[in-house]
Image (cartoon, rainbow, N blue to C red):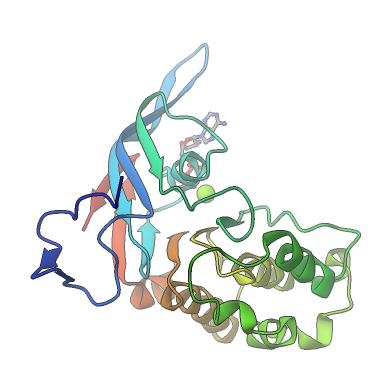
Length: 240
Ligand code: ADP
Ligand code: MG
């Protein structure tokens, strides 16, 4: 079967209206609900959420602490399953650094590897992405480390870094293979203004190279630079 039909309203005269943003979403959530049940109560953390993220765009998922951002990202990534609704990922959102790359809130660096080795390992495991221009992947690891202000720290272990430096290493690792879908949970939470700009720049470049990027954040600096903001409040998502 050839590609999915274009979404109504997005395509005119066979061309995608919004530049290089593709018609078929990389990610789509359809009426997704996630509940946390305890003996005392049932908490609806994500309530009937519908959302699409296309290649080439950076979507900011904005909401206060406790609004359901991390829960929604966990459903997107597949670390958790919805109670209701569908999470649809395009076929090229494969498991691995080139298909689906994550900057988790807890960062998840390998403690026995240096900054450079953490990034190089992702590059090796992810390899080249199939079927698309790989100019992104031609960036050297040196370039990536420099872009995120990590050059001087490249031979240190994660345990020898500040939280902000660890977080930028996790960002470098996530963009290393120019992933089809990149999901980042509050990726500027530990950064100052200058270094937030480095993080935002690296994530934006991943989208410019054709990836879809979803960033959970309550940082206005990030939201000022995204393609589109989706708001979440008490689990309710407003897309658009
Ligand atoms: P955010 O990332 O926006 O801060 P979360 O998705 O972490 O929000 O949390 C949304 C809501 O779900 C909060 O009320 C939180 O307390 C609750 N929650 C998150 N994880 C769990 C869990 N594992 N069990 C029960 N409640 C949870
Ligand atoms: Mg969170």
